[in-house]
Length: 400
Ligand code: FAD
Ligand code: UDP
Image (cartoon, rainbow, N blue to C red; front, side, top):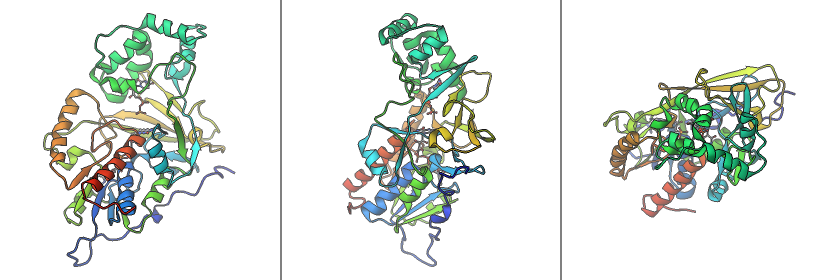
């Protein structure tokens, strides 16, 4: 009965494994090499192969496709996200239409709770949160707005992630919900980070407790990995997992490269390393049907090392006697997951970007290669735009 509603384990056997070096061959067997099989790489591979008739080699150093969105069924039969919770949300019709060619969707609206002291309350802060924390009975948006206005600290120019919060809700709520979480997540104080970081989580005077308000919110019905397999399933696409781009690059087998890894790595850290934040994911399975009351619970308290715990059954609707969860523990070491938004890092990125602009034979796409704190839909949009530009420049043809 357990997990009977799930598809079988995504199998990498469906991804072609063919040697990319032709024995004794001098002709380039591929038109384009794509480094990275995440959203950026998979969208470009699909467009270049299906939309431009190119022969495409996709390599990824990891043993699977999907990049950070990779999901797979664990030992308990539960579909889990290897690299932390990925919830799809967007306002872009184009992006939804494009991805819908490769997956069906399961409607899902994400809700998050925050553990503050002994209380578990809605996050982002909304009227329910305020009533619970302060023992109030605010009944309208205007009452909640007046309550927040009385606590907010005016900031002349909002620059940092601290300014963005205290100018909205004041220092007490900032300390409860944002300071500790942000210090753990980034290893920096909010006063050292761009305002855009905390502006991702706006405060509400309504009782809307959804994490996102985008017009489209859903999960790929059979998981992300299945969707990636469908995107990459094309006769002109060859996928090689467990392969370093550097080893392929030396072969000079294609006239164009799409690079979706860290941009500083591509240029051999010429100007020094660009900082990326990492995470340790602690995956656990518990012999209970339900571990926690929401898909994600945030832990802003600095005395625990994790920032949040995710329980996947909420995301997928899976049922069964066991449940799987993931703790996220931020770290300086490990795979790069987040660009760190602050002025000095942006300045260093700009120096690498200048090197990239001087390389018309390479397209840099995605979260790591353009050093942008992008969600999945933004990466898809960026990749589609990159393909259209390659067509406009005449680098590739538009065959459909
Ligand atoms: P990646 O997914 O990082 O793919 C890059 C790939 O390139 C990797 O697989 C890597 O192995 C490979 N690679 C790099 N260098 C090389 C090399 N030299 N040789 C071979 N291979 C290489 N977005 C949302 O929209 N909603 C969410 O809920 C959400 N939650 C997230 C939670 C976490 C913990 C994280 C880290 C991110 C989350 N995101 C979310 C963001 C989302 O993961 C990214 O926007 C998206 O996956 C980026 O795709 P990408 O292709 O740019 O990069
Ligand atoms: N944040 C916070 N407390 C929370 C949730 C978020 O301080 O309970 C801040 C924190 O700096 C975090 C940022 O807002 O890194 C963006 O949050 P989001 O949930 O979008 O992070 P992601 O899912 O991208 O890791």
